Image (cartoon, rainbow, N blue to C red; front, top):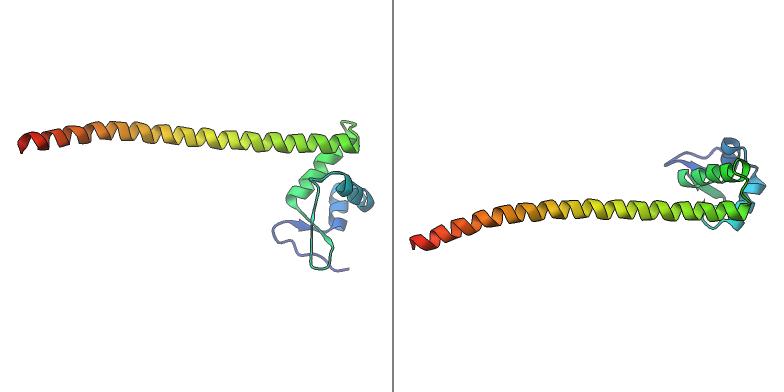
Length: 126
């Protein structure tokens, strides 16, 4: 059996089964019914899971086995969590940018007053 090389955390479906305890046929079923679980394919058409895909599988396993979600419900919850995470990240980025702009504005205001004073002094001398 050929073992996949792990460059940037890439896993075959067999490796995902071993890591998560989820059988391959269930993983394929989840892929059909949950759009966000969509592993890439290699040049031979075999599934190649990334670390993010693996995280999704673990989260789905928790939602289905522990929280008793249906597959559709777990998929909808995962989509909601991803959207919330994306919104939160965007909000944090915007907030950081706003703070940086306010700091730049404060610096510009502070130094523009000094430049105006210097300019006024030069005009008075001439």
